[in-house]
Length: 251
Image 1 (tube, rainbow, N blue to C red):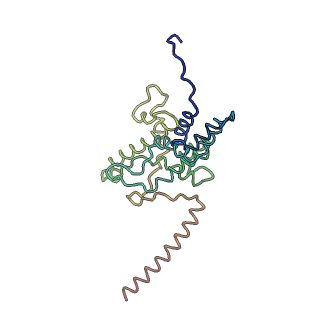
Image 2 (cartoon, rainbow, N blue to C red):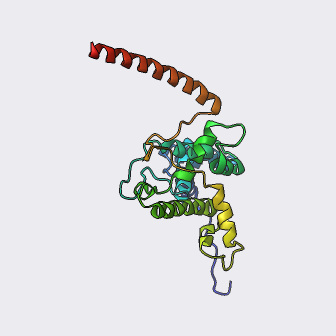
Image 3 (spheres, rainbow, N blue to C red):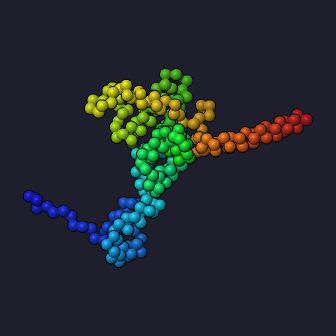
């Protein structure tokens, strides 16, 4: 008041729909949408516009981008080999779907930290835990001939995993406590290692020493048993055919 400053005036209708559309959908309003809003004289016209934009499938696509940035979503492994992650996209689609379905945040968080063990186990829960392994993967370091190097690379991988979980869901850099107690936040070094122990069993799916390009099946336990029975039967038939071919070659 002393400086003679005044609040900005309310935005006019055309500016308002443009701002809302870019913010909620990431897209400009269509000319017919602008026309309809400008001609809508109902007292709840603004609320109706907000509801319409929130119900658009583009809403999830726009806001999932922010979440994917936070959890370091990437479609390649990084490091020297930088292998493509051909099957990273189910996690991306899970996040978009969660925003569009207005999934409760508590469930959204639980699924990404431990969705593959929540009861009942769902495809969403299994897919959501991809968050833990979206970070860089040092396949060369983890297969080093030097045991100490493998241990160091694995320790770095777990720190990265714990860092993204703590920063995303707690807003705290718990990974700093790997080497020392936090100076200000109440996180002692022992808590870092207690938390790290939670994720010790988390690995990228591998075959031998190679990363399995297609990851793990996104199937519930019951679906996996049915799938496994079918695959086992098919493999048995393939083995019989190969044995017959071998006999023909020998003949």
